[in-house]
Structure formats: C-alpha cells, structure tokens
Length: 524
Image: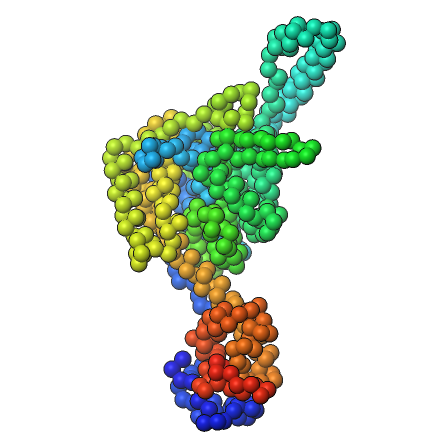
C-alpha cells in the first residue's frame, strides 16, 4: 500500500470510532482487490506435432466429445503410452546409451462438467475391447489351468508316496514332470478408480506387464488410501521407480510371502483432476522432493462450457473425425494384442523382453542440441531455474514421446528419426510452458488460500476490535499460523491486496505496545 495509518504522537487506537475517524483522514487507500483472479490462458496445444495417427485422433476426439484439445491429446498420449511401453524401450544417447521405458505420466486439470470421463473413454475404447476379449479367452484357460494343476498335484502326491524311501528317484521323477502350468494372465489393462499400491503390484504380478492408471476423477487416487500420510512416501517412491524402468519389490516379514521382485513392469498414467486437487498435488512437498511431480506432463486447458452446441457443424465434425479415431483405435489394438515376449515363460517375475529403439544420427544431433539448450535455461536466473527437476527430464520426455509415436505408426520400427523427435520436442515445449504457468499458479493459489483463511478469521476479530497486532495472529494461531515469519508473510498478501493497512507507530493492546500492527478494512 502507498499509504498507512499514522497515529498522532502518543495516541492509541482504542475504539472503532477512533479508527473510522483516522481512516477518513487517510487518502488514497482505495478499495481492496479480490484475492483470487482468473487463471491466465495457456498456449494452444500443438496437436499436429502428435503425428499422422495420434494428431488427427486427438482433434477428432476433442471435436466429437466437445472437450478441450489438450485434454483429448493427453488422453490419446496416455493410451498410446500404455500400448507402446509393452513393446519397446528407447535408447537415450547419454550415460552409455541407457534404455528408457516409453511410459508417460500425464495430468489434466479441468473442472467438473468438462467431459473428462468421456474423453478418456474415447481414447481407451480399443483397450477396453481388448480387455473384454482377453477376459473371455481367459475363462476356459483358467479352467484348463486348474485341471492341469489338480492332476499334477495328484501325480506329485503319488510319486512322493511311492518313492518315500528313495530321494534320488523321487527327484528324478519330479524333474521329469517338467515345469508347473502357468495360469492365464489377469486381463485387466487399466485401473480407473482408486487403486492401492498393493493392488497395482498384484495386477502387475498376475496380469500383463503393462498397466495404466487412467482416472477421470483422480481426487480418489491422490486423496485415497495409497496417498494417505502413512503410505504416501512408499507409493510415491514406487511410482518414480516404475517410471524410471526400475524393479519394484514387496518385502514382508512374519508369515507373509517374504521378499519378491518384479522386473520390467511398465506403468502409464493419466490423472484428471479439478484445480483444487491439482494445487494440492503440485505444492505437496513429498511429491516434489521425491521427484514424482517432475515426472508429470501437466496441462490446464481453457474451459469450453457454454460453447458446446449440437448443430450441423458439430455433426459434420463428428462424421469427418470418425476415420481418424478408428485408425487410432486400430493402431492401439494392434500394438497391444500380440503375445507377451516373456524373458522366462516359467518365471514371469522376470518380465518381458523389449525391442530397443535407437535414434538416427540426425536425431542424436537434435537431442544433444536440445539438451544443451535446456541446460543453459536451467542456470541460475534462467527461465527454467525454478523448475529444474522437470526441465532436467524434458529431453527424456521428448525421447519417450518420439518412441511412442514411432511404435504407434509402425509397431516393428527400430529407429526414431529426427523429424519425429523434433515433433516430440514441440510437444514438450508446450508442457514446459504449462508447467511454468501452473507451478506458479499453484504456489500463488496455495498462499492465497492461507491468506483467505486469515482474512476470514480477521473478519471475526474485527467484530471486537478493528486493529490487530502481529503477535496476536501467531500466538492465537489464526489460520494455523504459528510463528512471526509465516504470519508476516501471509499478512503481506492481505496488505498487498488492500485488506490490511499498516498502522505506523504500532498500537497498544491491553497495556502492551506492538510495533507491527494493521487496521482491518472497514469494508471487508
């Protein structure tokens, strides 16, 4: 504020009348401004950079569902990641050519009524069709497995009875039986509700080695059992490891199953949340410190509510886009539906083999140039300085997206060319701009929420006395503020917006003089 309350020498504000009289003599205070402003717009999603299959599909889904293009694009990318990550890894041309999964974690921020579930369903139609087919095929396979297992167990019991006095012969006979039959895979490729980490682990153990968490109301996941305070750190750590392509393990003591390790499992994720939940996710220190947040590609598209009319133009767009959607679904189905190439069919814990995609020489040169450019932007004072954890993974994200695009367009491909990688970099530049915008918005919104809570408490305080001293705020723990530093910071927000005006010279409250004090505006 440019003006402040200045009590006369030795004077003390003791009544509301005194305060109003002094307010009337202060010029230029102006009216308070709202704490919460509208969200600034982001960039338009560069859907053409998604390639000849995913780009038209994203546009067609956006048109038919009447949802934001960025939401449709995230839904398409997540479905494509789910399929492609089963078939290939991609080599990153650093650290000796490390193989990286084609896994993506995506977050779409959208309000209720933005047709999140419809967009997700449109992108996952082929996955759902395949899941139903696999479940139908698994039913007779399960019965056959159970019969073979029962027969084998009976034969083993017979051998043990007949050779109880000859361990060598028993061992020879058991070895001659060969490996035990393998159960059919659990035919669930996507979780759409509130999975716990234990549930995710079990699905990856008994089911396909690729899985997706596609939650159109991810508040149930981010606020559910897996993310409770006692579970959050472990769940976050495991999600980071599976994104990195590392092993996941389960270690139990006592009468549990003991130690067990799953290798080469893959997880794609698309969480769709409202702004409040997104803010809590973005500012959560556990998600930040453990690096989970930095692994997400985030967007918050502008709402289309109020412009989604059914007319001839809409019907034409739906008809024109159907071929693109069908082509995308066919590519997803073809990529997912082949058999799993297990490293050891008798020990599925070892996971599958993955084909290794490599960058062409021109693509390697583009990767190095982009990596150097991002490194320069992460320097102290650079425009990516404040989002280093995300920016440091940006070229890795680009390589993953390029690999996904390549596999979806040609499931047998072995190389990623420069054009595809450059297109992926265009997409990552969009996500970089969104990350900077939404990280800043989330931090500001979190601070404003605390300021709003303090303002509401001060409105109650003002019913008795319209001045407040700094110690009153943190000693009485207004809005949960427990120390002078935090109280001073939040008061500063209210002062900036004109809800509090500093009283120069301080005030006296119940016989004690306080230097730092403010007047609570009369028009709150």
